[in-house]
Image 1 (tube, chains in turn brown, blue):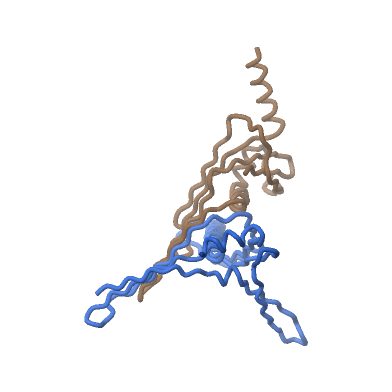
Image 2 (tube, rainbow over the protein chains, first blue to last red):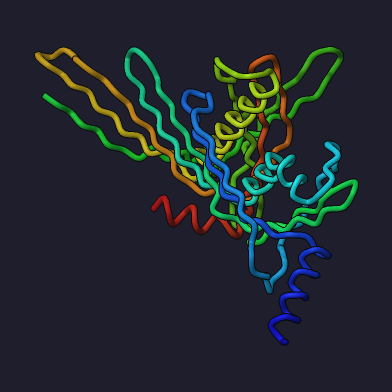
Amino acid sequence: MVSRASLFLQIASASLFGGEYYFTYSIASNNLVVSFEKLQISKKMTPTASKPNNFFHIPNDKNSSSEKEFVKQYKDEIVELILTQRASVKSSTKMNAAHITEHSTVRSLPTLISVDFKEDFGIIGIYE
Amino acid sequence: MKKIIVGMAIIASSVFAETVVVKSNNDSSTVVEEKNIVLNNNNAITLSVIGQGVSPEHTISNYQALALAKKAAIADAYKMLAEKLNGVKVEGYDIVKNMVIQRSQVKTCVSSMIRHANIVETKCAKDFCEVEMELKVVGNKWYPELVSSYK
């Protein structure tokens, strides 16, 4: 009985307060041209006790109808926000007499975000 | 004969003495003043970089080309911020045979974690993007760490 009630509360809170997602992103570039990009989004299945540390506001200009669609359409903007919070950079350059080769990698650790979708905008909360 | 020079090129000057360019217009002429601001325990400086990115050759649409150019520019900007903040490891070697250089190579390497950097401005042209990024470095938090890492 208690487990059923807690399950119902979880579902209700998820629908009321929006979902939480893990974003993991990495991008690599060679000589200022993107050569590799990987974004992994996974929905968090368990509730979080703490609250997000930073909040950002994204206007819903692309007319997303649901939270899932909002995350899908604004994934690039969300990735930018995550990278501004914490980004790991590795870069190497080789210079010969003939040419220069530059390789850079920017990665973000798996970052938990909360998405509170409204009709006209979405509020992105980033956990630290 | 092989000569290996391994050195740490510390770009301390970029962190400890940031160049700030102040522009003022006086009767249709632009005066550029440069001031050196030194990071210490009591102040904060803002590191500003402009990253550049080029779109790949084979793209589906112009939108994709611009999006990829912007992402490359962001990666370049992060790299430049890391260079300014934590410095660059430089490794160079020359191969000399019979007093003649056969091969000369310089490798540079950057590795850092950047937090709370802001994208200030994004400019995109046809297949090229520039992203201006800023990072505020607070002296009382960063100065002791930077000094200890360079000792």
